[in-house]
Figure 1 (cartoon, rainbow over the protein chains, first blue to last red):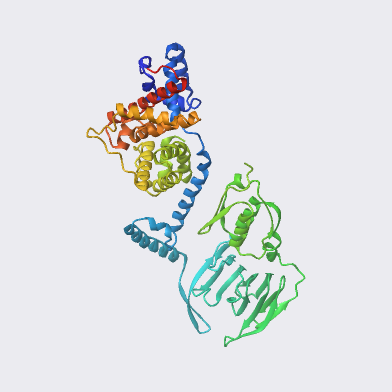
Figure 2: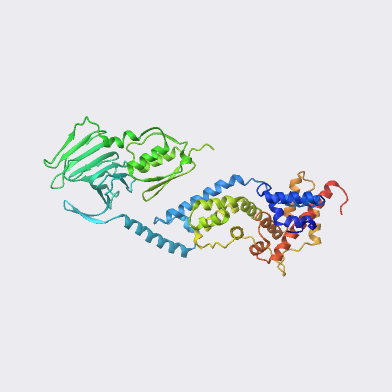
Length: 358
Length: 191
C-alpha cells in the first residue's frame, strides 16, 4: 500500500487508485471505503484531496456523448452486416474501396470462389428434354414431410410439398418465367405483365402474370390447379406442343386434367379446398401477435425464422398477407413493427428494436 | 461479462460480445478521442473503424493483449492518421515539452486577456488549451483510460519514466494556472 500521507495533490491526482475513486465513486465500493476511511484517519490531507479533485475536474468532460452511443453502434452494426453479406455474394460494393487494392482483388477472388461453391451446392444442373426442347435448368426437391420454400430471383416464392420437385429454367426472368413441377406446390408469384409466369406440370400449363395458386401433379392422379388470389389461365399441351383449351380461373376456382381422357375442364366445387385455406384464410391476419405470425410462416413455408421474443412481444399485425410471396410477407410484417430482416439460406433473421415500450 | 469472456466471445465471432466491449469502453474512448482530436466526426469515424477492424481481424487477437491498451493505442493511431496531426517534436531526451518560466508567463498573460470573459468554466477550459499537447494527452490516457505509465509510454512512444513525467508536469501546469486564476479573482496576494 502506498504511503499516501506524504502525497501532494499532484501525486494523488496521478495515482491509479485515487483516480478510480474520483471517477466512479459508486462502482467500486472497496475503493471508496478505503479512501473515505483514509481521509477520516488523516483529516489534514483534506486540502490536498480537494485540490487533486479540482485538478481532475479540469479535464473531466460533461457526458454529452451518451446520445452518440447508439447511433455510432448502429453504424458499426450496419458495417458488420455488410461484411457478413459480402462473404456470401459476388457483388463487390464501394465499401471495399477503402481497402488496399491487393486485398480487394484477393478478396474478390475469394468471394467469387465462395459464391460459386454456394450456388453449386444449391443446384443440380441438368438438361431436360421435354417435347423436343433441351434446356439447362436448376432443380430443387423436397422429399420430406416438412414443406420447403424456394425463392425465385424475381421475388416469387414456391412452397414444395412432400415428394415434389421443381425445375427452373436458368434463363428464368429474362424474357419469361418458366418452371416445371412434379408433385404438389403452392405458388406466390410477383406481378410482372411483361414476363408471364408459366408452370408446366405433366402436360398442363398454367400461365399467370402475378397471383397465387396451388398445382397438384402426382403420378397416376389428375392434375389440378386451384387459385388462391388473382387470375390464372390453364392450358393443356398437345403432342405438338401447342397450348389449347384455355380455361381462365379466378379466386377460389379450380380446374382439373384427367390423364386417361386427356380432358381439361373446370371443376365446380362447392366443397371448400382445405389446402387452399392454409394459404388464404390463415393469412388474413387480424390483430395477431407477431410471434404467432412467425410461427405460422415457419409451419407453412418450412423456413426457420429467428427473432427476439422480447423485442416483438408488444408487436401485433393487422393485415392481409394472402397471395403475396414469402419475402414480401416478411417485408410487410417488418415494416409495420420497426423491424428489419435478412435472409440466409433457409433462415430468416429478424432484427431491429420492435415494439418494446422504452 | 468479464474482460476475458468478452475477448474470447469476440474471437468466437459473437456479436453480442463486441457490443458488450463497445458499451464498456465507448464513454472513455469517446472522451479521450474528442480531447485529442477536437473533432466529434473524426472521433466517431475512428471508433467505427476501430471496432470494425477488431471484428475483421478477431482471429489474430491473442488473449494476452490488454484490451484497454489495444483499444487506446489503435484509436490514437487512427486519429493521428486522419487528422495528420504531426506529433510534437520531442526534445532530444524524449521527454516532451519542459515546463519553463516562459510558459508560466504566457499562461498569466493569457489569463489576464481572458479576464474579460464572464464564465469561470470558460477560463477553466482555457487552462486545458494552454496545456502542452503531449502532457494533455498523457493526462487523458491516465484519467480516461486508467492506463499504467508503462502502457501510456508504449502508446505515446516514450519510456515509462517519461510517461510519468508527462503526467506530473501536466498536473503541475494545471495547478499553477489554477492558482493564478484564483489569485486574479480574489485579487489577493499571490505566492
